[in-house]
Length: 381
Ligand code: PMP
Image 1 (tube, rainbow, N blue to C red):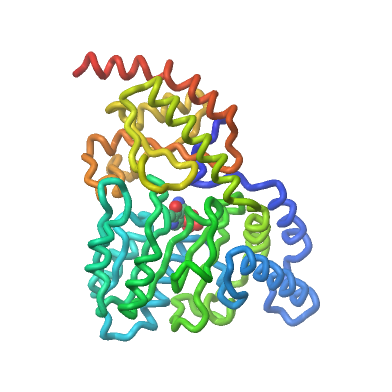
Image 2: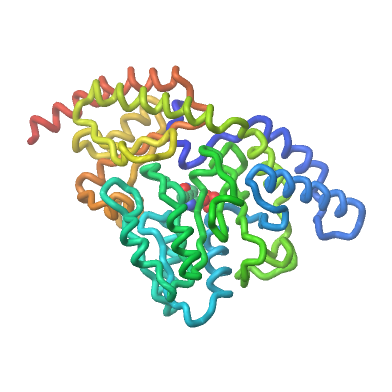
């Protein structure tokens, strides 16, 4: 398989599996137990927490382990809102947040909060004028992603953090797509809470963390005594060890991201040359190294994906499938892209395990596959 879907998930690194296996087989006791086996598990948990804190530039007590970014996002929003002054009734979400997060925004609206969305520009970046206008002293919380999972566009967080701080609002950042691809440090990011997920950087699925700034009032929605009373539930120790191991493996992200950018540029240049009707969204804004979000003329993404699937190329469409059919990406809709164009959206996402050879194979395979379809499209027009 030619795997070009690293924003969906990444293959687990062999060293991560190696770190997890002894935990699965030998360290299965409950870290809350008083007996020796429990104490051993507790020690492994503490080591993993220290590793995560070191890798992400935060304090050990600021790490809360979760089941992944969806949980971290929900927990951050509910936990920060639960401790916010009742006079602050407005909540701001980015308009291109992950679909699961926008469902939470809708739920908060139904619960009576005044939820507003910060728009993006047509290039997929945050509308900074709107953001500054919306962040006022009635705002309890701003919840915003660091990088978009579809376009790869990076959001300018530093000014938002400064405006939120000046207004006395909390800032939560969903850094799920950024962490593991670009350098990140919690201590300098300006957010009160940050979500991440191990499976986006060659760790296991079902393991993530919420980083919560020391001293920030928090009313956790998941009650229990674990994670210093901030998240109940027996810890997924193997997953946590896998998360820590995956972070330790990251190494020099600057060199790595430069390599992935070069691969993506080769892919995009080759596709645009061979298929001139290729249109790439967010092409000219700062974006994640391996993400390329595009359409080939007006070819339906479903058709292209199915044909690519026959060749063993795995990518993704920008559409959400539901029982009622296919819905265009809410991200492209927020950017003002028409529904017809949005249904043609394909996402190629390269990652650390991608190679030059893979890119060349895609560049050889796609033009002969797509030329007949594009010619058919011309004839039909
Ligand atoms: N936020 C973003 C930006 C994502 O890309 C994803 C995963 N696609 C999530 C949240 C959810 O992550 P998880 O699978 O760990 O719940």
